Image (cartoon, rainbow, N blue to C red; front, top):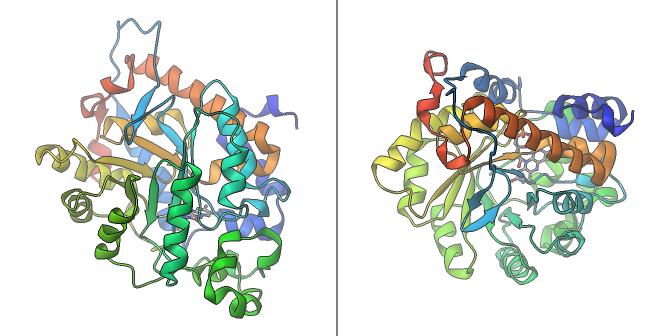
Amino acid sequence: PPLEHISNIYDFEYLASQILSKQAWAYYSSGSDDEVTMRENHSAYHRIFFKPKVLVDVANVDTSTEFLGLPVDVPFYVSATALCKLGNPKEGEKDIARGCGSGPKKVVQMISTLASCSLKEIIEAAPSKDQIQWFQLYVNSDRKACDELLAEAEKLGAKAIFVTVDAPSLGNREKDAKVKFSADKSGPEAMERTKERKQKAKEVEEQGASRALSKFIDPSLSWNDVVEMKKKTKLPIVIKGVQRAEDVLKAAELGIDGVVLSNHGGRQLDFSRSPVEVLAEVAPMIKEKNLDKDFQIFVDGGIRRGTDILKALCLGAKGVGLGRPFLYANSTYGKEGVEKLIERLSFELEMDMRLLGVNSVKELGPELLDLTALKSR
Ligand code: FNR
């Protein structure tokens, strides 16, 4: 269908389910085990209601904010997803970079270590000098390769490093495991550099994309490694995949620049709580302990509407990430799809801000929410 017929994220998802290869759909859409967390990520937002203000002059609304010290046009970003060439075989992540930088609102793109295209290609594909790209790091047991990736990201102009910590092994995604994966068609490029790549290439073909990628990640990663990493780069370091209040506080106290509350889109430990529920618990603690000055909280998982974004921001998130929606937009319409998704989500966000009675992101706070249903789960 023509792109004008797409109204929202669900339209992209439906279309992707119809046209993607069996392999791509299985890898992109799957969650772990019974997919309870994957569904809960979104349905938790259905238990949060608004208390809108009326008679506020909302002729002008401003969606801009600041991530890790840099100004951004909208409070949402593209979260890192591996293997974009499974769905967009020619352009992969490059079309996401183009879509994020060519519309009126520039959107931050987080680039996966396991991207199909090389980091250099993706950064060079970005059309605007104002657009921000972050690098998501999976720590490999080949620490030399890992340090090289870190240095390369900094040199190429990435603005922050997001270290994923919820994947000491990749989750049990059974739909995906049933489809064979050949590492040669869609990358990932970064795997080529590591020691295990060459000897494992054959094994990889027999076991589904997630199992194959799992080989790349070092399960011995611990807090000390992240603290050490901070000494190796000038870029802010954020840990992605934090799931409990105690770990958020620990990260803040250790001087890490931020966390992403995330359960990897329900692809890791099933029955992990939804990130928005964790956020409701932890954001007040961070404020109370005065740790919020140089520390930012991001959230991802199940964000599909402008209202979801507003709820997370009211609860104290600095920004929110979307994973699958951008994969689906990129796989169905490439760069134009990514632009369209940004336009629709920005449209919803502005309209919802007007209806909520706020002019800017900094006016969002917990007093605008009714959390009764969220808390009585
Ligand atoms: C992911 N995610 C992910 N995260 C990460 O840190 N590195 C990665 O390479 C990937 N790869 C990846 C592939 C696919 C197919 C999916 C669906 C997800 C997790 C991603 O960054 C994000 O946390 C979730 O996708 C957010 O949930 P939603 O928006 O997909 O519901």
